[in-house]
Picture 1 (cartoon, rainbow, N blue to C red):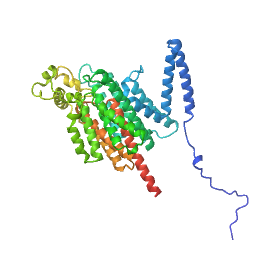
Picture 2: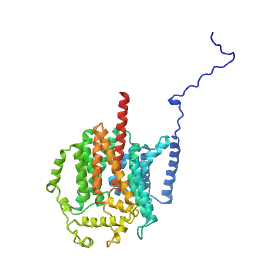
Picture 3: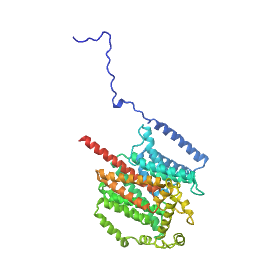
Picture 4: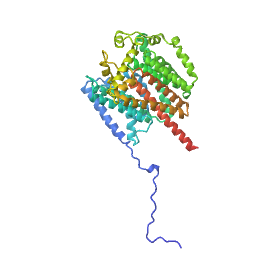
Length: 489
């Protein structure tokens, strides 16, 4: 006998489960319209003030508005921002000034690029940042810089230490490193990585053409700084980029047709570009970088590379050979280093003495060092004038002590580990080529910084950590692809 439902009872059915399209989604897309209205009002007010209050000519106002629209476009098109950065960073010193303290052309580009990554994600209610391999080491290095600045500001290493000026310097350095976070969080797929690498080659070509033109105009006896602005920084920049570009070209199966020729031409121009500043640190750096690339591609080719390098007196330009062979000691350096090191190149002799003094002074504060930019104050008492460290590693020891060396070693080892990991998991010629190019650039950068402090220059750090961001995204893409293949099987 079946049970009967009581008279007047109401049948209760379970509530329907909402489908994916019915699940509440919280978005801040409406804020775009509010922001657009506010920007329109701000632009109208700006035009009014510029013309009627400050008497600006209409053509200047139009140029300002065009630049403003470009910046807005970059903000809301984050992929475009990455390409703009790669084209602008080789000519950073030539970009127009903003008139805002601490914000020049390259800084403004980085700020806009960061906003183009962060603002759209906030408006869409998305997570702002991914967990990436190098985010910890890069953040730790930036924290080290801030700590070193605070240390030097609170406990000045010498008279005349300007903490505010040092803060602006640290700000400039930090922006070159934060490029990594934008790239690691904005790049989506292999196609985008490939197009960014081509833009990277185009940007290097622009920088190299400017340097070559300046070199030919000044004459072979003049050392030039190109659009980077400094002789040795230009040499280190081209050492890093030439190594990366040669790595991409030698593994160029990932690129077809015109793109392959763009990368090849950029590699040749960057290779010549590293010669013209006459920076011996750049020479040694690019030789080490290309040597590493040769080893990674084919260990047997290292012998050929060694023979080519040994024959450099035959094929290298005269101005390069003359720069390498310089041994004259000038009067100032002879007084500083005496006769004991007069067989060395003048810069090498002084650097040995500087490094000895930094090592001795570091014993007074071995753990945390003497603060940001303290080395000139440490050397001023020993020489007739202050000297910089002429080495990233000794500068780190003098400024941040053993803690600083540990953080720097962590960052460097993490970068090398990322390059090796991508080389291990690479399933496409593009991923393998990027891994080899990045490892070659890493070796070039490390060697070049033995003889100078090039690691923190905004153009060099910005370029290197741009590549580091591409490497980390490539690793993630390779793992995602491998996982989807396993699921599909």
